[in-house]
Length: 135
Length: 172
Image 1: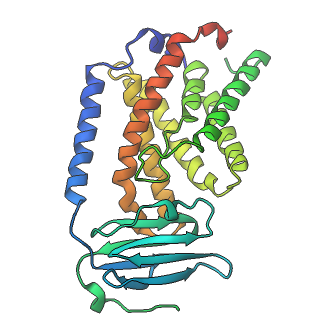
Image 2 (image 1 turned 120 degrees about the vertical axis):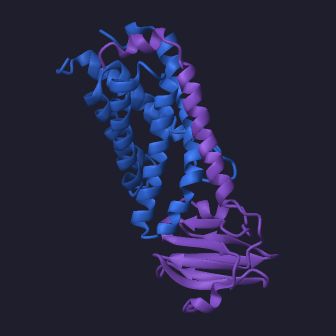
Image 3 (image 1 turned 180 degrees about the horizontal axis):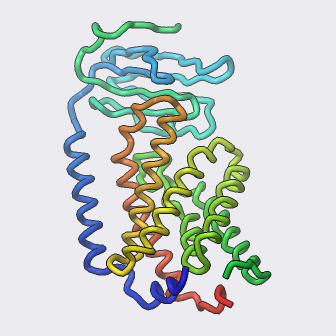
């Protein structure tokens, strides 16, 4: 773009305004994190696929749930010691498996290739949802 | 300006190749935020920026689209195009607008940070749309944090590349 190369070459990489803007952005993000963060131990893990609730797992009992994405692809979701994790997945990126086990309310694990979403909730919302488990 | 001559074509090919090499190298690096798998610095985007700075909009779009297409082929994951293309195109458009209107007031780092932020947010939105799982949107704060760090790193890299590489290499 016209003259941009020279401008960048001879200008400073950041001015005062950059530092202000970046610090502002970081402060906004910190505020969002503080507002959302919670260290409350969660009680239930809600497992969604394609935005449909498929299973609710209580975190206080060790258990295992096999989620069949389709006939040949699955995830194994394990509750152990009050924490939930994905212990096996045959998806491509394995991001869900490498995710550390979660237990605090609001934290989540995701498996994009299988449209799988696991979120921890604190309150016992279990009465309010239709409990449909495909097992 | 509007025609692509041979030297420029060769130079653009080298930039695209560098972008792809960085894309491949990056796939071996640990995530940018260790606790958040999948977050990346986006080293390949340095070269899309470079094409924009050295040559212009059209050339930057060429590098971006080839980078996304071949990146999807090399990583063996064609579906990654659904994320990388919308995110790449919108952030490149943002970069063009920011360079045009507010580059006098802010530096390259901030522009890079804004683009990385938009890039990550668009990727999250695409993921939420494609997986039909709106809960994915709750990853936006984390993706934004990664975006700010990534933007600072890529912005500084672009600055040092432009500052220390002799302009003879690119400008004929």
